[in-house]
Length: 582
Image (cartoon, rainbow, N blue to C red; front, side, top):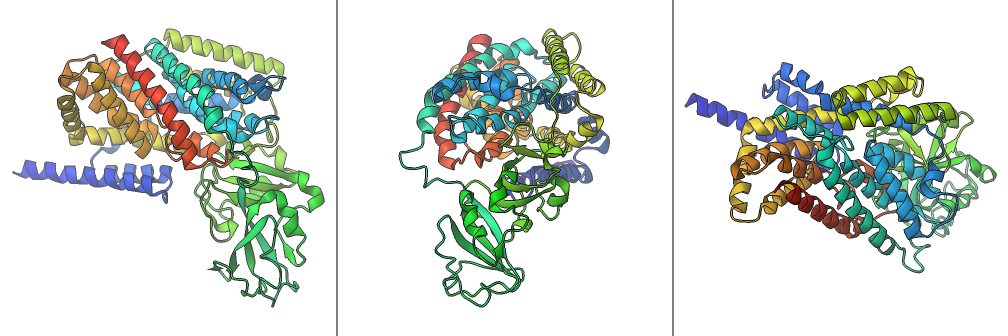
């Protein structure tokens, strides 16, 4: 009786911890890293996983491999000439540009973390002379995901699946991913080349209506002629490019702002509109934008996007001491279609937020730029490209690394670690830069994902779900069972991270294969492919968040183009795995 009570109590604890993690991630109010850190502390304190086992989990080969590849990826982005390689010297139409651009994206993503690929390629794509960023950035994010499935080390989810499967006696290699990955990449490639030009084409006359809307904060100067007069009298409601959305007064937000609202000394005015008309705000006597250059010096401004591993994520500009850190002031902020409120310096920043920066003289020489911000206007700010000699040596070393990984001459985690060490020792990336870019947040997320999988498995939930799926597909073709596992992993990746989704689904997949007496390898691969099928929602994957704002996308763009890509991806993955293994 005591044993039953203890088991029930443990199940309640497991359910509570998993539910709190899911709610924290879905709410968006708690960062992914903080949510998983809280989960890790919770399961250790409650004794659901011993401290020794938890420490062992963080040193798993898969986590070592992922973190090593992040370092290697940063070194690879220092190779000059990315823009020319992506689009060539001649101007091409949208479909012809996509053929070249997405082809190279898929190939590079097979061997480099997709967040690094998107971060490196979104700048050149945004600067394309003939096509808008809207036409290129979402296909870039989708192709980076699909191309990552060509190898077991193209995504963190695949690496984690391979590592955990090995603990169960299943050893997958590059060849197990090569054919289904190639079919998936080709299917997504074809879908994007055919569908993206139609779905992402802007309607006639939409160029003015769809201007990127930024939030700009202006300060009422002491003694300004605006003080004591209302909004209507100051003609602040009749601006061409901006709308006065809020007044911040002594920490209190006044919104909406009526024409009869008076302006007082010390007010902060929050304008919403097209930043191309910022000169209109400069022209208002008695109003100033903090840190802004004068209209004749607008060349000192840059358009930046917050990177997925930036120290700015989850912090305000004030907390991050933005001006001192980057020698730049934030003039405007934009976040997809989300409405922002309050003083810009007190808004908590998120991955993909778009910033307009007024840069100081040291801005472009700051070494921390590339790890925190993607600058879309210029090539490689804050970074000195590698010389031809070092670029050639790096490419040669990376080719040897890929060959060693394919032939499995040594364990992949060791090969990745040695490649990262070589990058540092050869000076392709400095020790200081390595320390700064080390993905501590990613390590916490992956660590939490491994422990989440262990908790679900020991709670018995994976066995129950495996029994349910096996019962539902009895008498159906074998591919139906693969489809069920694929859909489960896909659903989980929309709730959690892709690595979490893979590790949650993996024990269910193994249990289902055992129940149906089918090859376990097929179900493990279905798990990996399903966990990386995050195409429908902009908030389901980091690279989607990175391109959301600079590409000026709405949820409808993800749903329309993402549904086409998801169908092509799913059919290619399930059909190929069924043919190969059944």
